[in-house]
Length: 595
Image (cartoon, helix red, strand yellow):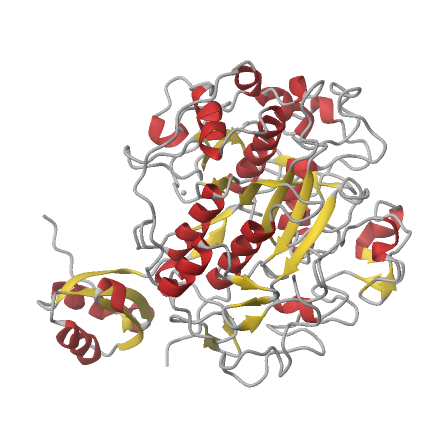
């Protein structure tokens, strides 16, 4: 049995704190012989299991599998599409497997994660108390929006009429996101949907931060009238709406099957009555070993693009280069290979956005991320992607008939290159919305080989898997244990019918009906948050100090009646130790359908 992996497949962790760099992070529209004594620690490391994707030579699948077993490993999933399999093997055996005659290639099974980095910065805290001054903070949204030219467009373009789908960890109804129609709930595809006090809400804190950057707006404010007022909070596209599709739970955990299902839902419901989803924000990515041509997650994204939705994806936080100075690419931002590079740069270091009180990120990284009672800092290509999603919403309002290719060409073609910075790091350069707004002729379409989406779910999932009760979710299965046939799924996605009501891949994933659901009026009347009603009350009051609200504790990991100790939540835990069947704790996720 393999050792339990980290319970993570989508995880957000932005660096908090204030320093003297303004980082611009890249996004995508991803002969000495020494003898030593073997210590106990090193021996344990060599025996530790490592997940590999093994591609066998033609006709040698059985021999390749035998080589893995002979070296103490075992096969975890068959990958017929690549004539191979995934395997868990001792670390010491990897070189021998790579050299075996039956093996064409053996590569690490990589992971998927949200593209933020909380708590990594050690430059000091950024707690401004109650006297926060956005005008003097170089990382405030006020200053960053002026940097990319967003506020200069608000006299005509504010994102009005444009919905931005946010496939993330949910959104909390904090001030700036709680006005009628600002946030519309799509499905909650997490296990938290089974707890009425947690369903749709952001228990992790990342989605709220993204939503604030994209389209936050203080109640009663006017973007056009207060374009240069630093004392009101407004996202890049303040009059756009957010359609929240929750796929990550209180630990930031998700599975590729949840994300694909979320993207599919967005595509099929983009133009339902009252909706106009034209932008999709995906602030996470994978390090899949599959070509995008076969990767099922890439195929789902491509179908969204072909349906008329501008898809913004973070490039990743995995570069690890040396530190940089003002107005340059920070060390964490991933680089391209010279052939496929990130498309654009946007601000992504210490970015101010809305705090989600009591969330995992708020509790864990408050010592470095907290600005004041309302605001929190986040760093990463997640934040950069949110900036671009807001920018795309502004341009879609200005050019409602333009295709995603034309919007992308507009953003890339008018970007400002940074001096002495490689295109591998910055792509076309820093987004320049004033220059983009001056262009009136649509650009050319991009030309890439289309995806077919018939690769493996496991290859798209990567090497870090969701784990419940010590059992990792592996192979060609979704979170309900239902087998996933990516060839069939791709055909359904191409026909826009992978969702049938609330059913996706044979299981019901839905909670209450999404139709008409919004944080407005009486829609939330009588709802409670961990046993204490927040209907008709503002989350911005002083009662949130010290982690308490209206008598309910938000400190530590307790949700006052819904405990997140370990991997379970009170009253609704994973039954047994298997992923088989199609239920969560012996009950399906459905109450009403997502028609």
